[in-house]
Length: 113
Image (cartoon, rainbow, N blue to C red; front, side, top):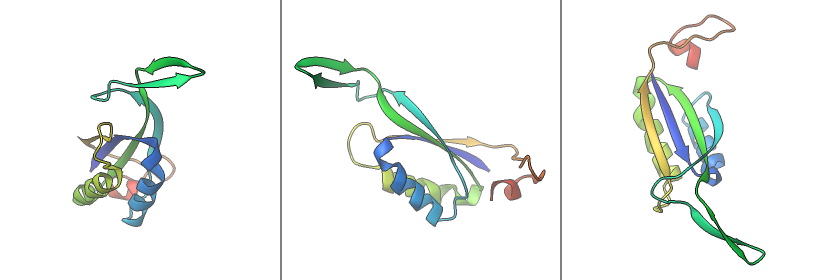
């Protein structure tokens, strides 16, 4: 199993969620985040005053998937989240040693489907 962590723009989340569910991803954890990378923040204007936002709103989406599904999940994420602009985000793949469903005690693949 692998944990797939995605940091991306909030505005693509609904489409990403729907696309992942359509390929059989059973669940995900979503956390609001803020960060900066090559974007270096943005400038805004409020009532005639210019201000700079150093960190931008992002979402962190975490999924645990079977090894055989990782490539398909990554392809869906890239296709859905790519705008071609700086700030589209990152994908991290992390090995998962074990998964256990607390309610039933199921282990491994059965715990994540």
